[in-house]
Amino acid sequence: MSPKTGKDLVLEYLEENKGKSLTVRAIAQALGLSERIVRRAIRELRREIPGSLKITTKGRMQIITYLGLETEAPEKEEAPKEEPVKKRISEEELRAKRLLAILEGEEEELL
Image (cartoon, rainbow, N blue to C red; front, side, top):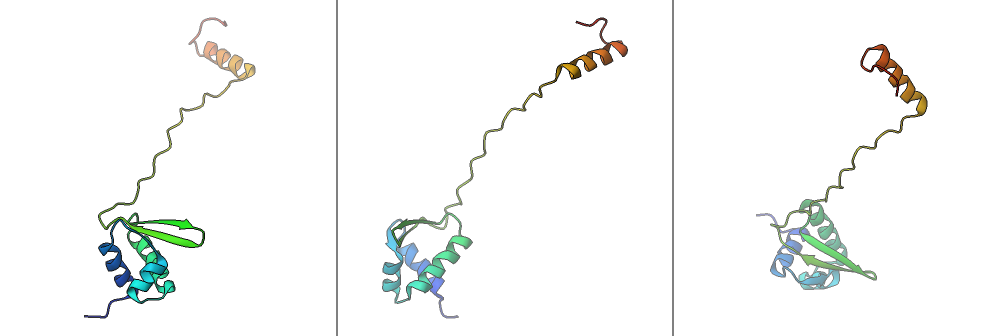
């Protein structure tokens, strides 16, 4: 079995502390890793397991909350569909349409 990577260690630690808010520094100290390795692992986990981590920033400090593997990425809300805009017809276009209708026999007289 190959040795565990920083990402594996961070994921295990986050699973053990599911729902708790932790700083990068606290995770690094608990695991004996550098903060840089922890930040890289967090970045990779966010990419690989979307929606599993909630990350907030206070000043320069990142607060990580692990939500779990079964969490799905939040769905984007669909924008409400806009009703089609009715095209404004100029007087000339309106006259031309009426004339065309008369010529084609669809309308008997101009209004």
